[in-house]
Length: 242
Image (cartoon, rainbow, N blue to C red; front, side):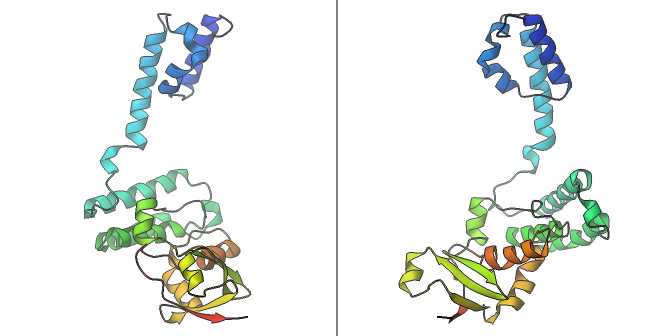
């Protein structure tokens, strides 16, 4: 188009659309294509791309399956969400060969009553995380957005390190915790009155999506061990190793 070769430019654009490209907004704003706008072929091409884009948007981002994060989901919505997640993985997940013993359809059927019985959005998303965790892939899970994370998946202002079978405080970012004496080098030995490893295996591990034992332990003890509501306390027992 910049070279003034309009016929060739339209030919390439048609090939791009035929191959699946459908970003009409980008094409309309691309100043490199400004010389094509007056051509009689431009408006029909834009219209075709807009139709394809709208169809694709309905397929993959349909508002029928969206809701406010804090609006209680109905049983139908929970079942629909699980069904969509099951279908997405069944037809697009590329690593089923790494989990050869996983019966994805049987797991879907076993999870249906669990999502139906979920008493809250948090409980539902936990079941969804448990479901996807069986794929054993750290990039395939259910992740809350910021508002939902604040409601039930926040973390206190510290970093922990899983070191030789111990959970060690690595950094302290919260001034209130520093003022209370919490310091790097402390060991977390219990959470909610239970030994840290027992708590992690029962309350954290079932929802962890990870591909290796090292990654699983890192996520379990260094990222998700102390998650909870933003305004709720993390009750831990610590030991000063200094």
